[in-house]
Image 1 (spheres, one colour):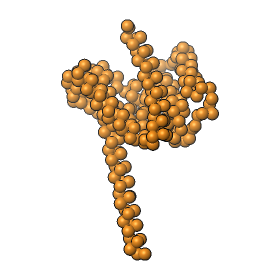
Image 2 (image 1 turned 180 degrees about the vertical axis):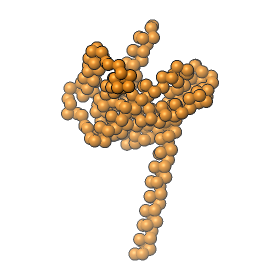
Image 3 (image 1 turned 135 degrees about the vertical axis):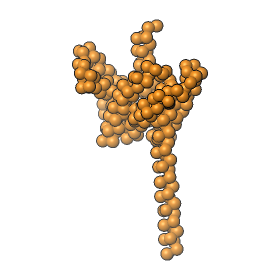
Image 4 (image 1 turned 30 degrees about the vertical axis):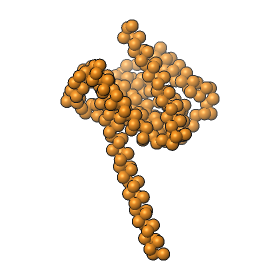
Length: 228
């Protein structure tokens, strides 16, 4: 199997899995009352650890070498690229639904085309434009089943969806140099782990302030009883 065909199959499989994730996330948020923060946190930490274990046993024994040479690249990729894209996607689902979030995220090819046009000064070919148009149209028809009334678009959902797509562009283009030196599982493993650690700190601070507010409220309540 040629590398070109492998690349096509990987893109198709990852796209299908991304769509499946949207459905599962909507179910967990709407039915099981999980928060987007908890889901993103758990997913990034677990995925990062699993990828690093796979890297150690199957690809690279020295999984820490990349930290010595490209630590900042991995940190930026994890926080802006992976955490930004997934958190934006989950927030969009939370404030709309999975079909709406999927359509917004699949603006990714349009943003990449604009990047290559404005930064690389490379004009897209007619075939590329037609392919992007068909991809967006096909995705919209698949996720909505032709019923566009199922699209729920609030300002928060729109902002989160576009942010997720832009972060997808970032993590698609940013890690090219580091990927030329290390395996993709090693790069993505550390980046996911860094993104998970970052949002873990955010969740801990959020829990701290909630507990503090609860504690202060209980004290104010006791004082009000004493005064009464």
